[in-house]
Amino acid sequence: MVSFHDNMIEYRNQLMKGTIQKAYRGLMEYFGSLRSYFKKKYPNYAVSGIYFGYMDMTYFAVNPPLLKDRKLKIAIVYLHKEFRFEVWLGGYNKTVQKEYWDLVREKCWDKYKIPSSIKGIDSVVEYVLVDNPDFRDLDALTRQIEKGTMHFIKDVEDFLSQY
Image (cartoon, rainbow, N blue to C red; front, top):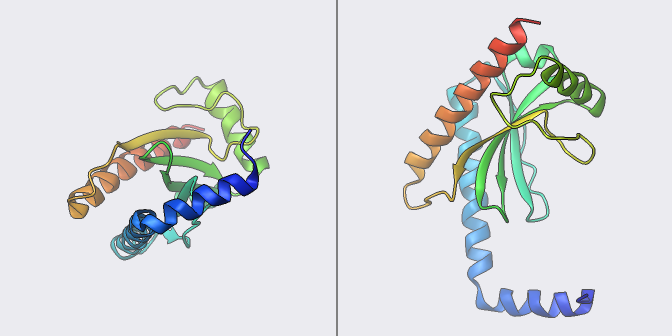
């Protein structure tokens, strides 16, 4: 097992190259513009601030009124290591999350990935929006994320309207 000190030496070496800082800064700027895009285009949705994470995940939540009333939220998530954007249905807290996770499993709603357990997991259901995104055309990437997110929200709302 590599020691913390050895990891820090490697971290410094990588930072000295400068690429990580530029890529991370660009990703965070893009994420900020993506959040602003949703906030401006969907003014009736509550849009949270950005959770920057520990270079594992970065996300913000968009809350359509119907889901907000049920204490649910939609998270647009970038998973750093997996190098992809996902959209998740989550609860405001673990109690709400478990309630809806149980409902999804009980009703066998298998349209999206359902985590096998919610222990240590922040989602009820998940969907990959963009795997291995192309950052050369950010407008096209934003449209792809928006289209997938809005489809996901509609599916979730349609499912929940039955219960």
